Figure 1 (cartoon, rainbow, N blue to C red):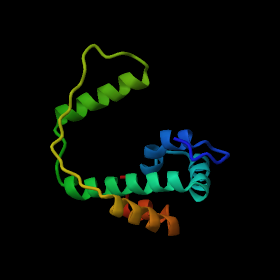
Figure 2: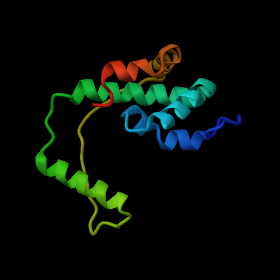
Figure 3: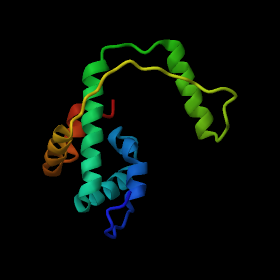
Figure 4: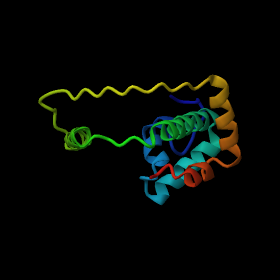
Length: 129
């Protein structure tokens, strides 16, 4: 995705690291680059607001359920194999039964709220937990 406007940090790079930003898993310098980009780029800010809203909705809906230990182990092993660049011997299939409804109106409202304080909401909600 690209908004067509020149930025110091390209839209594609911002979106590639969006979840790291939402989960507070980035170095402060990299976070600052993304914040600058969000201030300049409405499409990326809207995507940020949508992903932030979905993350908050899932946290509210599924926050009390414990993850089965065997599932957690399989997911972590798969993440490790991807980071190591290895192809797994077998595919890991995870089925999650959750219904999440996000309308265009609620996503747009979240994006508008994010424009006034785009980073405070993630910190206040504890999205990095």
